[in-house]
View (cartoon, rainbow, N blue to C red):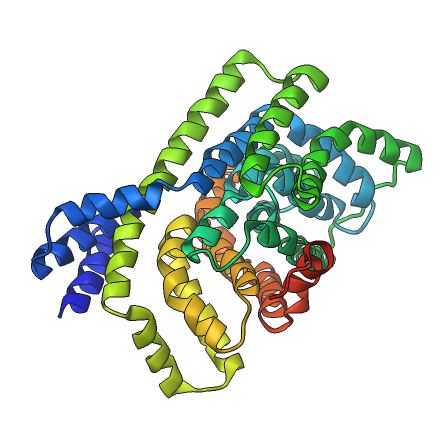
Length: 430
């Protein structure tokens, strides 16, 4: 009965339009009151959930991404991407994919990525004669690569939701190949649609211009190399790397590029504080939710139910993907990770999947939810920039969805995409 109250109240609050964080907290409170447990349990679980040293990485990574967003780094990355692939059929679309991937590497946030790249690329593509739905779909889908990059705070959230079963350093290394796979799938989709619609190709500016734009963008792109090199060499930990990212970003935007203004700095700091507050609130209330799910053995019950459908690992992995996708359509990425990891990670591990590989599956699946209404954060941002309705964009979304699903299937069923680099660079034994 208690489990029914927990699930029914949670989904009931979501249907009523209650924000996810409050829906999680209120459903946990309803269950605790029904159970007759002391109300102090609520606050104890919230505090224990948020009072973890590794969570210091979250505000720093968020702040670093906001500084990159407001510090003028995007323009230099866009120019590099345009020079590299702008001469291919549908050149601006291809440039958009590469630019979103590169900026996702330095921002670590799909929302920041679509905000920065969308503001530059969508108006530019419309001006050059590209359809608005194409410009928005390319931008919003390519921006999801940011969730897999070393600066992604969602990796930190997953590592802690996994209960210490996975190394943050291994996750950071594991995200690079899936990010490349995702970019490649998006390039194929963007090119295919461009050919079908007859979009023109641009002109190659010459290698001299390519190297000139690379030199301009390279200081910003170095943040990925600094984080990886520092962690792998043992100079700093994964948590400390977030503080290093902020320090480097401030030096870059204030003194090297000299594009950061005081007003933009305050805007970046304010947005980082707001985002951090939302994430930590989610972590706190999700800890209560996880406590109750553990108390009622939700993971075991879910495993038994899946076992009745099939005992084949590939079927179980497919079921997990479908469930995560459905949940991700109406839940925030952080909330989905925090709630679903304790349920599905043990099931996936029992079926033979490594926790690092499952982390990549989780991140891509949650990113897919960011582009799917009713939540669809990146989709709404992209549509707002392009001045087009979500419905109009959704009518032509299938090629880009197919690219995301193809990348997800590669990561789900080919472990090497997630595990090769951690094993090669860190000696990961998983």
